[in-house]
Length: 489
Image 1 (cartoon, rainbow, N blue to C red):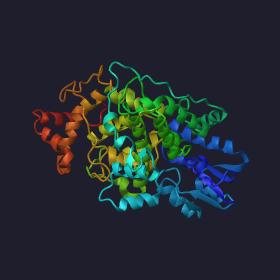
Image 2: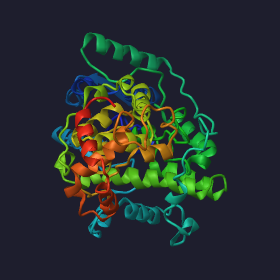
Image 3: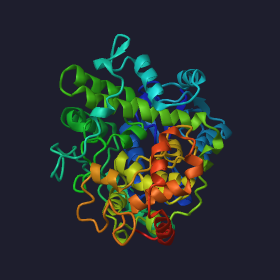
């Protein structure tokens, strides 16, 4: 029987053709030499690989090598591999002569996406998501969406409950580290000490599932205890509650421990049984078979050079305080807390990523490709396919609108409305100029002023651009932001 080579993001049973199929697993040290990943991300990936090898026992051959090629060339068995998730990995397996199968771990096949895209003038996630719902029969009543509406975003944009420090939901089940985790930690310590391999972020107890059993426990707990309240507050932020009611399933999904259809089917079952409201379930389903699949397919659909898109001419290098996760250097409370979350956990939910980290970078014209690379390395659920369209296209609007209808730029008023960060911050979200000028408020108007020509043809930006010319302090604001430069706010 052909031995199945499993990459570290292909660790679930659905990547095998039958239960007894022999498996090759490879730990490549060169991956960690080339780029400085978050320490907890490196731990999670290696822990997941080693746990899978322990589960499979004699069925698996785990090779620790400098490179993938070295490990594969030392393997006598014929190999097959499910389509890898990056162009580099795909090209490698082809050069090595490995049989490449169709991709797994996503709800929509490449053939279905290609057929859908060929019929569209523009590629919009909402249209793709509706098509996926129809094809898979998820949250459908015959030919119509459950509840009569495809999109319940209007019910899922609530600010956090007034005065609350955290949502009233139980914590997700914790992770108990074992001897495999202890071995991973010792190896990473040795790599840092003896091999000159560098990481970013802080080490810490493993927070995310490394086995299918752990991932299923998280899924069951989320659907039962957290999904019912997830929807209304999915865009809200609280300084004292970084998890809110989010599922924390992106990392196990991206390791291949869960299949996206089994995840959304469990969520749908909660709606059908009356255990979770439709708005929460629809918002979650949208994340899994909508956004997740959409960015995967865009990674392959767009040209190989898409990651270099830079329609707004953003050329400022990422500052050291940001790349090194120096949250203590930042006085802006929202940015400091979110950067500390990346430093301490390798994870924050989607709104801090988009409207704090990404928004700040776009306002200041940081290089989009460098931002995508940073997100890839700094987040436990970050992969090249995840971050290319999400960061370059959506967060930084560097593709000029090929995947997003407008820049996700916002001032301090958005952060103030959707979080509790602004209370107690040294900056005032209503102030544009002066010592108390909010970096996000001032940055928003500075971004519009700098990119007015590029954005003038976008009908969704008409109102903000008209507001720009009503500012009486615009000249002083622009000079203030130029002076701020890349200093930590």
